[in-house]
Length: 143
Ligand code: SF4
Image (cartoon, rainbow, N blue to C red; front, top):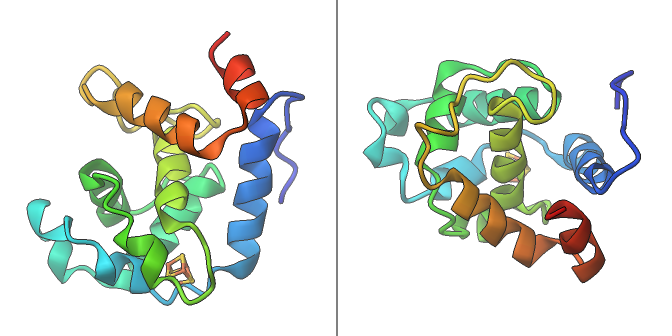
């Protein structure tokens, strides 16, 4: 990863995931193509899958991704179809989750999603944490 400061917290877990995803993702777009939710965001189903994924990867690098990538972050309901679709074995649902965190300003990029407007966001993060983090990480996360 670049020169972004990596705080000594469980956030390191996320940075390790980001590094791994950036090194292995081929931007093929199959995760986006498998998503059953794209039809529920205006214009998203017609978007270029590779471009949308590139936008998500921008968010992972704490850069502002393209507009269609934001639409995808907003419409995700954790179907997990993207995980099954990835030929590289990347947890694309987690990729979207971490990108959401970046879009909310939690990783350093300017916030473009407002958590108060995303009423289910914290429920989603809790669910995400429970399925992805160890008990020790969960304990530290909830302090
Ligand atoms: S399917 Fe996997 S390799 Fe292809 S764009 Fe999505 S995360 Fe990257």
